[in-house]
Amino acid sequence: MRVIIIEDEKPAAEKLLKSLLACDPEIQVEAILGNIKETISWFHQNPVPELIFMDIELSDGLSFKIFEKITINCPIIFVTAYDEYWQEAFEHNSIEYLLKPVKQEKLEAALRKYDKLKQHFATSYQNLSNWQSQHAQSGGFKKRFLVKRGTDYVSIKTADIAYFYAAHKLVCMVDNKAQKFILDQSLSDIEAQLDPASFYRVSRKYLINMSAIKRIKAYPKSKLLLELDPPLHEEVIISQENVTAFKQWMGQ
Image 1 (cartoon, rainbow, N blue to C red):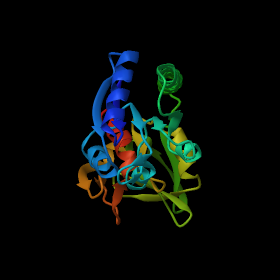
Image 2 (tube, rainbow, N blue to C red; image 1 turned 60 degrees about the horizontal axis):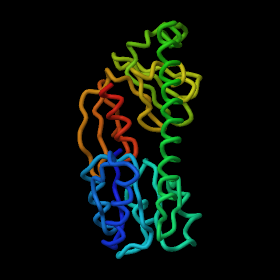
Image 3 (cartoon, rainbow, N blue to C red; image 1 turned 45 degrees about the vertical axis):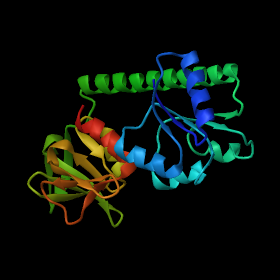
């Protein structure tokens, strides 16, 4: 398990490290970070760990300020000498709130809790993956859209659709020939009908076919900029908190 420790007191950090390894020698502590600035810098340069142990009162302020600058999606175990922050802690991915000095049995119980949660969500994810696989094998994903063009109706293959987007309370579909059609379904309803291996909801506004992505460029503040074919009249940006999931989808 990949772990980081955010703690500004060196003796406390060393004690926590020793206690963690006593619980499980396989734990990999990838970094011990001493303040808010150092933590933000580390997250901009490294992948998100599996679990974080975080003190609250750091040398340059409350650790909650970290969440104002970066998005952290992994579970957090807060370790602090103060009990007045517990409510705010549980607003930030907290799965446990340990008071210093941390007893070994409390630490072990927190790690068991993490393992149970991890197992639960892994099972849920596997069930979802199995459902998607079965759904695809049974031909359950939508293969065509019947759309209106003038007074006629035409059938467009799903594989020939570049993207969908929402604008002015309408949902538009654009095929790979840049033809645009208006649909009478919401973007969420359309997303539920499509194979998630091919289509990705990059934002509230855009649902994109992987085949329409021409280029992926780095963008300020750890975001990504997509160039599509056919091109759009505005930038399509992957938010910082969505970058990891998007990269996993592109590499599946």
